[in-house]
Length: 108
Image 1 (cartoon, rainbow, N blue to C red):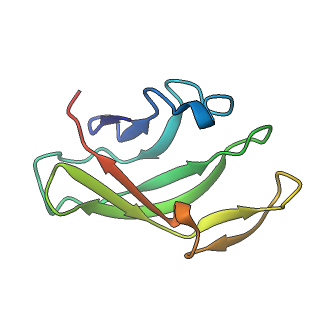
Image 2: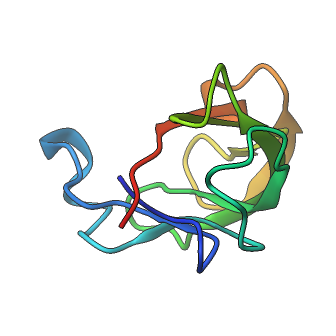
């Protein structure tokens, strides 16, 4: 991942081979307000995106901050649940594996 605190973005830098057909390098995973990367108490909030091959990204609200220190970002929010055989979002779930996002922060 590429974390850019000034732009308030987290992008895929090198997607894993298992998701490379759906997600290209540079794809935005999170977009929010800029944050202070050196302030452990800095809240981070914005829109994350859930991806499914052949479907448009599904946006959802997440918020969080640094944990346990400024080198890791943890965001949480109810993640979209899509139709099993389609793209439509039919629900949002706190139990989804996509409801908690963890990123190792790197200055760019």
